[in-house]
Image 1 (cartoon, one colour):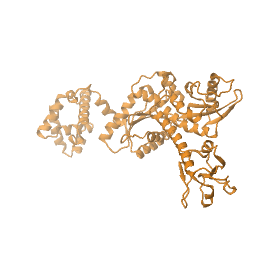
Image 2 (cartoon, rainbow, N blue to C red):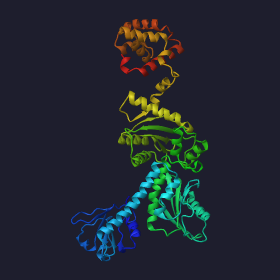
Image 3 (cartoon, rainbow, N blue to C red):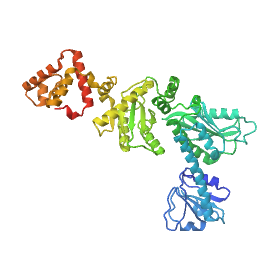
Image 4 (cartoon, one colour):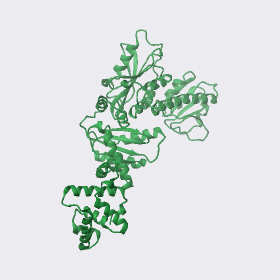
Length: 512
């Protein structure tokens, strides 16, 4: 994890004698410390350790660079620039300072690993609060947009709360600053002073698909807030939002965050999801029951074990539909639900979406449009079938539309588990057997005749034979079939049987 110059000043305050802050000094942009090597070019976003007397040897120090210098206070000529210089007391060994800084970085690296583990293991929200205790040292609360409390710091953890403040006051304060009226237009963590309780509050509103969905509130009690607390709360909130968006489940179902992605994952996993929970998940993000939806089954080329990479890929897909998308992960595949009614210029965003899939080497199937999200499993079957059938029959595409394979889907599911050939007309089975035994072309002729809308002339042209040759073959075909081509039921039975046959046989076996 990268740290900021402001955070370093706070952690090293006992040994600092002077400092000058440059640009972005409050941002988490500094890499682990390095020793200054003579004639080595300095880089922005890098942290260097050196002696104050070495400063004149440094040329072209870039903005955003941070120098930890051992020695006297900073000379005047090094202030006022875009880089940061922090001077620590003379007499310290340069390796001691290096080790102090490395331990500090390791502490925050461990914190980041714990946050990522909370997301990847889908732990309860309470776990996020627990792992943040050593970083913030102040009570924290997490609530959803309906102000249901999802997690909070455990009672008794903090001993320095003002005497007239009780736990209920703290919780009410957290709710107040996490309300929709307070956070609707806030994009970053902000600090607020509460005169009644004489406390400061930092609140971060988290937006899932640009909608306020969850809030994290930190209340000043055990120690005064530091400048870095706002930036660190912003950083921690990124992981909380990932947990909310990508399948987090709470230990207490009644207090579970209502995320479209969570609800979508639960439904596709076969869980029974109450209709009230489905409606709440839609309403939080501005989805209405009559909105038009479309579902994509996205197949990844190989298992992706890097969790943060998968999150990044999902975020890039989301950006193509702004607030009109929810993504669920099923194993190594993604299921993308798009609200067409909320998506501006849907055709354009779909093209951009396909471009992102091509970038990652993903292939997908697309369902028909629908409105009832409770039926999402049906449309997932459509999208999955479109991918499975389309990628085999016409490989090389990025997206396969179920609308092109509806007939094949209906036919493949209409036999009730029986062998399709057992349902063919008896005469059709005789034609298939005759062709195999004698090498005749009656089946190819029959398929061409049906494909040509039962037009003898067009069939002969398609087969490149004389019309009289076709008529001779067709007379023999009629003798085999013994059906009335003028009867709608007989014709439908024959056409369905031929389509079923084509589904089971390679294309070259039946085309002329």
